[in-house]
Image (tube, rainbow, N blue to C red; front, side, top):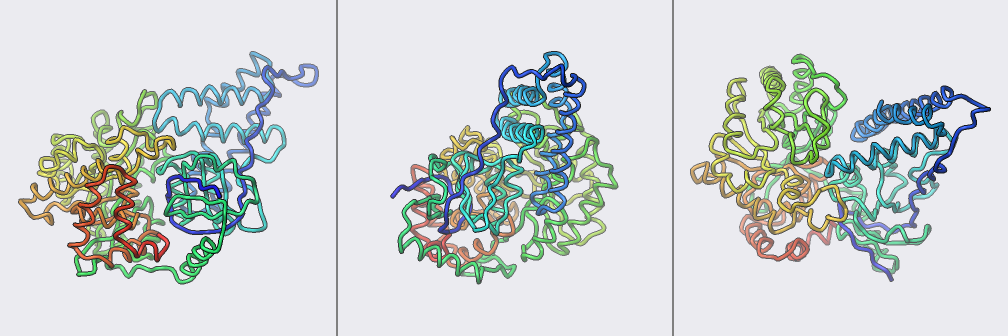
Length: 567
C-alpha cells in the first residue's frame, strides 16, 4: 500500500479509479520557420490573431453556461487570450524573424510568463494562466483538441500537477469524484473552487501524478490522504460518506453552541447571485461582500449609479440582517486598470487594498457614497470595512470617511500582523474587526499562499497564526472597555469554513464566522456539540501545540463528531 499525503482542502471520502490530467500541448520545434514559398508573414500573423480570437470566444461562450462561481474565471482567461501584449509579441516574431505562428505564440507567452514570475507572489500564480492560454492557442493553430480534464463515461478521481483556472471552472462534479494535485496551495484557484463545489480535494500531495490511470484508490479529503490499497475499511468509509450525502446536513439559520451561546454564521459573497444562494442556504447574513468582483472586467471606474445598483441588489436579499461590505480590495491578484499599477516588484506587499486610496481618494469616496445610498433604500444592516489596514492612523482615516458618508458601522480587516498586535488601538475608532485568515497567515508565516511547496507553512492552524487571532480578540475586548460585544471580531477567511478550526476560533473569542454557504451546515453541526467552556479549553489546547499538524490532531481528537460525519 502507498499513501500520499497532502493538504486536505475539502472533506469527502470516496473510492474510484484514477484518471490523470491530459498531458500539456507539446512545444513547437525551436527555430521553426514558416514556408515563405507557401504563405506570407501577413498571412501567418493573421493565423495568430484568428486562433487567439477563437480561443477567447470559446471561453466566453463556455462562461455563459458555467456555474456562477466559475464565470469570472473563464472570462478572465478569455481576456488573457485576447491580451494585446501576447498577440503583438507573437506577430512581431513572425514578421521580423520568420517564425511559424505556433513557435511565435510559444515564445511570446514565455516572455510574458517570465515577467510575471519575476514579480513573485500573486502575479507568479498567473504564469499558470498564461501557459494554459499558450497551449490553447497552439492547439487551435494545429487543429488539435486543447488539453484539459479527461472525458469519461464513468466517474473518476482526477490527478494532476495542478489545474489551470479555466480547467477547474469546467469540472463536472457528476463525473469527478475527487481532485488530487501534486502542486498548488490551499488558497489556489483549484482549492477555492473545490470548496465551492463541495468536491473532495487534496493539494500539494507529492507523487500522485505517478499513479497509473485506472488504479483504484481511496481519497480522504479531510485527512488529506490518498491510498492505493482499497480494503473493506476504506470501502465502508466511502459508503458511509455516500449515505451522508443522500441526507445532507442542513442549517436552520441559527448558529449556537450546545449551551445556547450565540455564534453568527454568515456567508462570503461576490455578487447578487451569490447573495441569493446564501439567503437560500439560511446564512444569518453576509460576513464578506467582495465588492471588487463586480469590477474586475471594468477598464474604467464604475459610476456612482452603477455601484449603487449593484450594492442595492445584494442588500435586498438580507432585510434586517447584517451585510459586511469590504471596500475595493484591488491590487496583487485583483488588479483594476483604473486603480492599480501592474509593475510592482512584489504586489502582495505593494499598493493594494486601502493603500490605493492614497493616490486615488475619489474612488473610495465614491464607493462609500454608493454604499450609503443603497443602504438608505434597503433594510439590511450594513457594516463596512477596509482591507489591508496596518496602522491606527489608517483606521482613523477610514472611520472618518465612513462617518462623512453617513455609514454608522465602520470596521477594519485584520490581515496584517501589526494590526492584530495593536488591535486594542486599531479598534479604538473602528466598531468591529474581521480577520482575513488567508492573508494573515501568509504575512505571519512569510509564505506565499499560492505556492504548494509552502503549504505546510501556509496553514491557518499554525500556532503563531492562532496567537494573532487571540491577540486580535483580546485587543478588541480592551477597545470595548472589557465588553467584547462592543468591538465584535469575525473571521471571513477560508479558516472559518473548517468545522474543527471553527471551534478553536470561537474559543479564542471570535463572534462570527463567514464562509462559502456550502460549509454552513457542517460548521453549525459541529459547533452545536460543544459548549462555551469546551471551546475555550480546545482553543487553549491548540495554542499550546508546537506545529499546525499537532494543533489539528489535538483538536480533532476532542471532537469525535468529525469522524462520524467524515469531516
